[in-house]
Image (cartoon, rainbow, N blue to C red; front, side, top):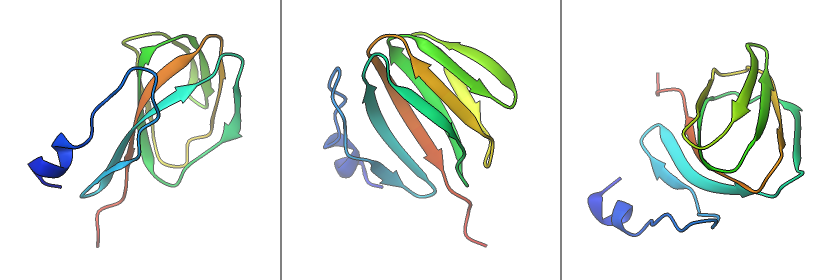
Length: 101
């Protein structure tokens, strides 16, 4: 990733953004509508979620987390999780990939 590529990616309130790919990580902003449910699932990669607006609840094998602005959630690779979004919610999603062996 170069500084020039990063400068082209701007967070707009409430907007979906295309993923920004770096070496070993992908960053994107996601807007989730109120009432939406993310059914139980997992990913083969590690993930961080940063809540910037909205509210809801995330359930994982580690327990329940109340989603609110400022909350950061870490999900290890292969950890199951599900979520319910009570209000329109905006997340910054950071997906980490395994380093090349």
